[in-house]
Length: 104
Image 1: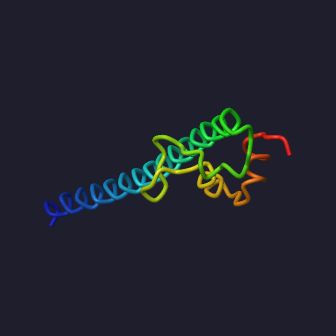
Image 2: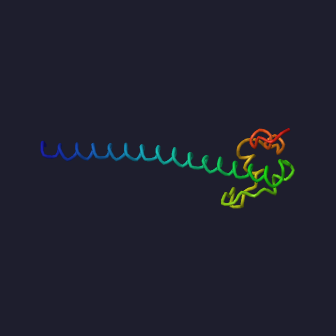
Image 3: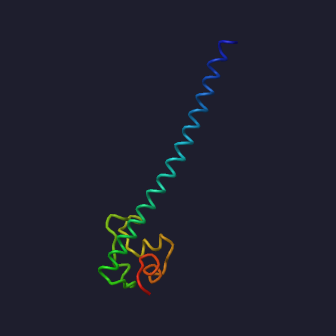
């Protein structure tokens, strides 16, 4: 009986350790993937706002025409208006004023 106890205890300890590693891995993967998305969103917003100010003199009616290169939402190239909606501001004038620091 003593000879069977040792392998069963080792198998249980190994199973618990593997389970703990899987849980820790899931925690880190989920946290890092969310962070990289928000960095991309902030970069897209800054790029779009720069283009809105430089090319359209802060004209909020042109926000759908300001395309963000290398940033896609739902498989299509995002516009500044799309990025604003993703940031939680659906009104183009408010987005230009609040997020892009355009005058009212």
